[in-house]
Image 1 (cartoon, rainbow, N blue to C red):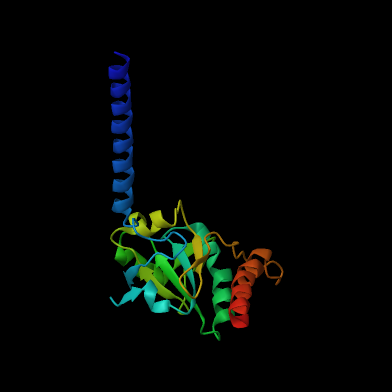
Image 2: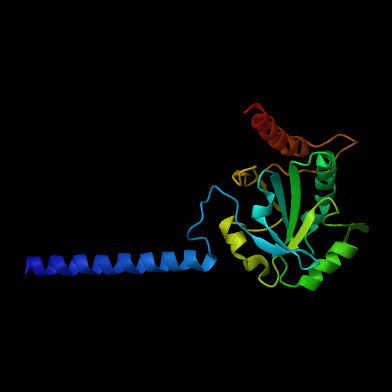
Length: 204
């Protein structure tokens, strides 16, 4: 009797674990990340506004800063200016590439934002500029597998990626606006992360 009960108990545990495993694997496959190394950048393939396919693999040997944003995102607009100054700072350095990825599910909305920006506190701001490669996840939008891979809960969000495709920083300091002409600590730390990495690669 005891043996029979023990077998039933073990069988129920096995069924539970099997069901849990199937659900977990199913969720992972749905995100398309089952065979990806979580320490490496998501291997995206996205189109720019002209329909050209851009791949993460295209930037091997470069430091890549990815900036995620959506339409009507006030913090994205507010932080676009200091991030623009960081892009300008690295413009002479061809080893650093900036990519902005729009997470709206409507490509027309994205393109309109690129052309016309948006108004914040009675002033027109642009989410990005010509120093960044602009891509879109439409029509998936925020439900693109990449957002799940980076465990994104909202925007703005930045990811800094090393020359071999390794993730250097998932949550770098926010590049905040200047005050009285003085660069913010967040912007300085943001650049320091990149500069320290570049310096370390030069010494090898």
